[in-house]
Image: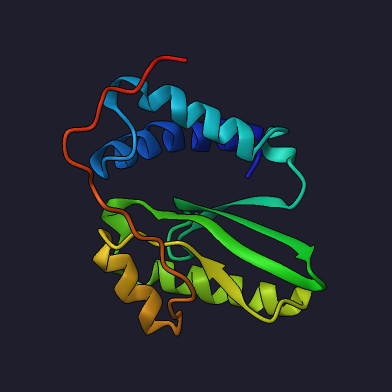
Length: 159
């Protein structure tokens, strides 16, 4: 992914995250874009050149079209190489054709080739298609985060 592709990726990622986190009740609609921009600034302080972060375009071998993107991280922590899939996105009209499976298999090969003993990713439970794909490929739940909506919350004070 070159710099222009990266900027386009972030331009799509920011509103997508904002929208999803509003749908999930995590952020307010009014502050979601700002929160998403801040999150990406924290995650990628040096943009595409943030150490340990890697960005790839997904290309369909049959026609050479760019059909998605992948963001993964790899860095040593605790004496082990940690390989994490931060984002995998296949264009909606290209889904359910094996592209995500192929990308994940290639990422597994990359991770193994670098010396990682496992590969990880996060998936929301409101994404059953992704959960089914990951389970089919051998991914297992390693931890769980739980949330409970609270009744009658007070409005968040502006800081």
